[in-house]
Image (cartoon, rainbow, N blue to C red; front, side):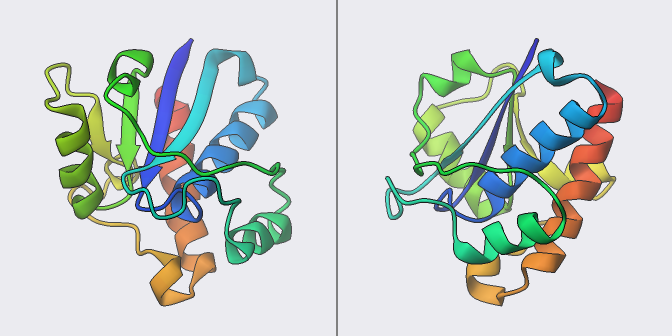
Length: 149
């Protein structure tokens, strides 16, 4: 079973969208048992808060099931718990490496690498308000991630 942790700044927009999109893609492919998926934040700002209403609305619009959840901050222990730690932007990578200390197994990557867009960031809809664009970036990367197994 591949264990994936999606990480963004506050764990209320991009990373939970990625969590539920990936869970849905795996379920539709009959491969939900192949993955264990969670999401987390690099910051403490939103700990305990549910997903942003804009993220919920976009997932609802696309028919992606989700559930109420509480934002959490990633921990150093997550490095050993997960096979992949997929981040939404370069700033998230820098902050994650501060929390984790190092990445000897090369688990920490930008999510858009899987969409053939290495080095590119997924824009934060908290600031842009564009949840549609965020969804499109995430679905593109998660679809490829699922294909790669």
